[in-house]
Length: 139
Image 1 (cartoon, rainbow, N blue to C red):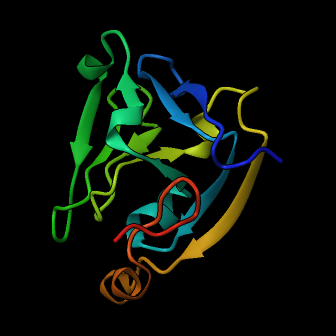
Image 2: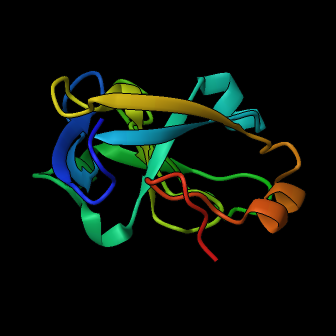
């Protein structure tokens, strides 16, 4: 398994390929399976990269739309054509959450799945703070 200091460029996007992006992170990531109402219905399991390590490519912005609910803090971004959420801005606003199954094959060498209690977000966030791509928690 690669150390967390190494980074690679991951390419990915939605099912119809109209939304494409690049994200830089280690090849070994911790992905979070959240049980909030949105993530659990979409089966969205994600890892977080800092904003400056994420780039939306080409004319992808023309094909995305955003859904919010509750506090309207999380920005659930999805393709207008195929409906896939390949990335979104989590409620913690700690970076960009990448749906790990939307990463093109070949750059993720290992994905460890951990569970996040998004149903009790305030309590979970306060006790654990927000998670990053290394599985560490931001302050």
